[in-house]
Length: 292
Image 1 (tube, rainbow, N blue to C red):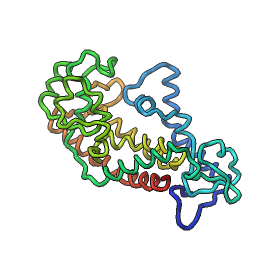
Image 2 (cartoon, rainbow, N blue to C red):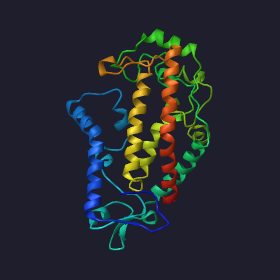
Image 3 (tube, rainbow, N blue to C red):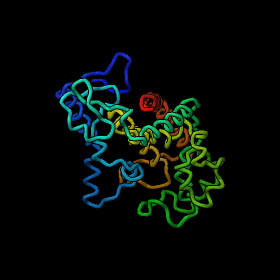
Image 4 (tube, rainbow, N blue to C red):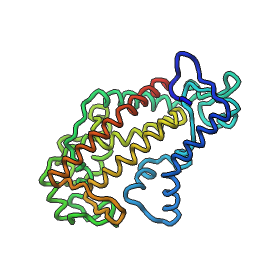
């Protein structure tokens, strides 16, 4: 079953058996991640890599598991969807109607459309080597993951930061730089300059495709949101493997960006993620256009 922005040929009509099957598949797909997260929370066991996807990104697991078809799809025998914002009756069924959606969804879609179009028009920049995570612990006695040791110790970490240029373009990474690290960055990202600065090689810009997808919910097709979430999972792993933290106890081998070989490995992975993110960004642009 296809789902996505409105099509000129008219809405797709989906009977209850088919949309229930799609909803079950989506829930099972996301349970691979939400199940272990719930179990860790039950045990009060923090995870320095995976928690980020459920804390910094604030979409609740139960919402991540919820299936929506997106605009242009009429669901038969789907009265329960009328409890969700933006859904209304049509053609003997129920569909998501952008015109009936809350104003916040249309406003978000307008902003996200502009941001993603601007980002997509730029060439990926692959020279940051993940140094944003190092800049977040530079010359501080209170690193963000205090329970996880630094691979090179505090002094060794500081020396790496001082030996390499900081070239972060992403405001929501830059804003966590320590006070001594921020002036070392090549530019000063701000929220107001976000559309001007974001570029498709940035790990955080590619992880954020998941954020933009869930901020458009329930107007974003859940298959697209799931694709963006799985991309964010994989990008987050690289992000932390290239960080100054020693994550061996959690089963992660480091990408040693303090070495030439590690930087080359990081840049290759970064390029692959940029390629993988590009079609998802295009699909989100289409969704935003359908919602505005």
